[in-house]
Image (cartoon, rainbow, N blue to C red; front, side, top):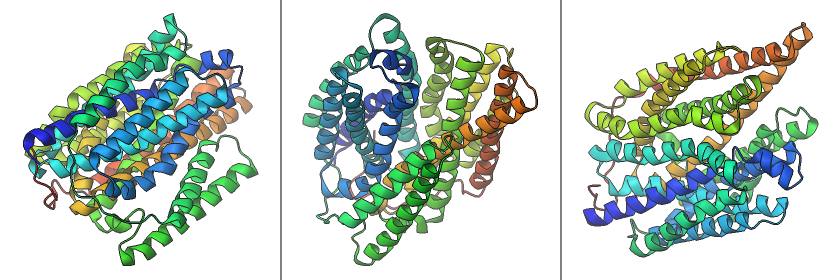
Length: 471
């Protein structure tokens, strides 16, 4: 592949990733409006997020196999066509059930697009330039979710909820059509048959586990059963992959975990991602429930942090290429711990500028962590394992996000109830619960820093299967 072709591939993939990630967070502020227009309660409305997360958890483990079966152009075209169909269906949804189905369709496309982007990047970019290019990718991946709540807040301020999707569609369709025509193929395909038992075990295991974790705040026998079934399903899935690896036919190749840098980075990223998602939810609850801010104001307050995280990405990538990971990850981890600790100390009268500063510090700390960890983890693998490594990262993130959210809500609920039982007022009890929940996120970040400290500054990487490209 020529340098120009490699650059074109990544440009179109980054553009597509920006659109699908924007869609993932753009619904956050629309839940109250949807509850009224579609006549559903809050628990039902949460299915718009839960269904998206469940679909991602079920589909991502299969993408490692899928991306080896089809060409880059075929994977891109299918993912973007699926996304556009789901977005169109969402914009014309005539019932809540149809809207949930549309979100499932959208999530299926997102589950393919992210591993496709990461796998392609590792194949077309020279090892010494991967940090810089990963930094450019992280710009899109960070700015898009930051813009989502603000964009939806502005749209809802003047238009109906359907316009959230109608705004995205005119952007997604041209990217899908033009990108499908201009995209070049990267790597060789492998005609490996799918193991349907693995696919079933993956769907049951990851689906039940993520859903059970997402419902942990509703203590019940059903939730316990779902988590147990999920754990057993994942264990059976892992056992099946170990058997299939003997004949080189796994759905998700777990030989990636034999590489220490990858396995440690995977663990650290899971903890960091869980703490990040948990703290994002807690911050929304703090601002809207404890401080009574509007969804639009909340989205605007947290937007600078996301923008700072994305804009710093290219700089972090260049530093990684020149100096390695350690000079970024350790300060980044410490910054994340301090920011989460600051959130744990927030009260009912904390100035908003302090909340903004803490969120920006957290975002910058996470930026200094994620770009090096993504680059190191995949860069430590053999090239034929890139697609499986990126898929395992994605699946782990979904489980970590569900677990982080579940634990944050459980701790918040339990501690708020305990404070209320001791005579605290409603607001004071709620703030107590938030303090403990943010404290849990900070403790998790401390554990993550401990893992990061064991990683080397640089890793040896295998040469890509295709000729590298300057991007």
